[in-house]
Image (cartoon, rainbow, N blue to C red; front, side, top):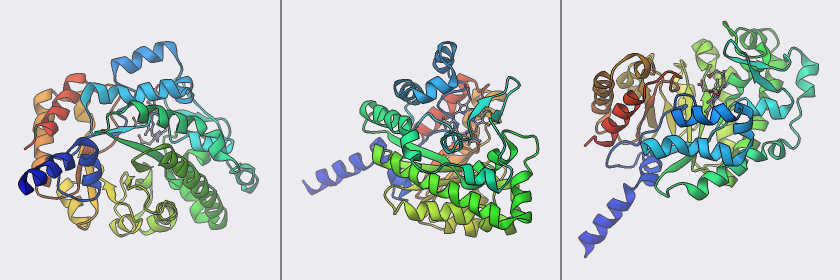
Amino acid sequence: MQDLLADETKRKACGMTQRMLRALQCAPVDRPPVWLMRQAGRCLPEYRALKEKYSFQQLLRTPELAAEVTLQPVRRFKFDAAIIFSDILVVPEALGQGFSFRDTGGVEMDHVVRDRNDVRRLNTQGIADRLQYVAAAIQGVKSELDSGTALLGFAGSPWTLANFMLEGGSARAQTKALQLFRSDRALFDSLSEELTLAVIEFLKMQIAAGVDAIQIFDSLGGLLPVEDFEEASGQWMRTIIAALEGKVPVIVYSKGSRDWTSLVQTGAQAIGIDHEIDLGEAAQKVPGGVAVQGNLAPELLAGADPRLVAAEASRLLELMRGRDGYIFNLGHGVPADAKMENLEALVSTVQNFA
Ligand code: CP3
């Protein structure tokens, strides 16, 4: 009887929600959980079909549609986690700096944040009200999601958001935020502080709406020299994570950052690893008790064939074998031209890993 109960506990523990959440807690799992950054949208035919009828903004702001786009990749690939379909730029938008897409690719903010007055004009009051549509989408997903699948919320890091706001959108070379950090620390800090408060309120709202874990996208972390990372990005993420009081686990994905001390000190339960570094080497920098997520090169999904993708996925799985707290992911987002057969090869390699 005791044995039966133990088996039952193990079986339940390795059920799917627990697989993602247990890996985040660095607890043993039957196999690593898998989900992919930017799995919602972009390359899926069923997403493209919706895009024929609705604009990105309509999909984002209509909770039923955002929930549908969130669920599409989970239905197709049985990922261990869903990530809510939204964008990091909804926070600047809620602060009063809207965004749109350029025909040539990339995003454009409706104005540029240049000086103290522009920062003062950002409206942090009632930000959760203006982002209520994200909470509604989360609730919609929760009601349909298999209890076996974790739901991830997310936000951009203050540093990454500041870059888009100060550049006025995507830029070939992102230089303005680092310039401001060096030339007017007081103004840089007050912008980062406003963004930190906004992100805290946004993430608390997502937690209240039902997300199981959070990922902070510090996608432009690698623009910072190691010696500036803590001051310009790390400390703000640490403040955000502390304010969430451990209510849900947090993954920090800081693309290109190599200040491991600062990354670990954020208090994140997991560190996302990009594909510019060897996963084994990165994992050694992350202490036991903190989970590791990553890092298959996204280009392989577009350029390689299923055999190569499977071989690379197996290599990463073997590298992490025996490490409690490993989450399979890419080193960055799914490319728009990823091939379905490559995604299938990746997912089935992880799901069949024993
Ligand atoms: O991970 C997911 O699937 C959830 C949805 C999600 C989107 N954006 C949807 C989206 C997430 C987590 C993001 C994060 C995001 N948005 C980041 C950080 C992650 C990263 O990739 O570095 C950044 C920098 C943005 C800002 C952004 N959004 C840009 C620069 C662009 C235009 C260029 C591009 O990447 O396509 C977007 C558009 C965007 N966000 C799309 C999607 C599905 C593409 C629009 C479309 O296909 O209609």
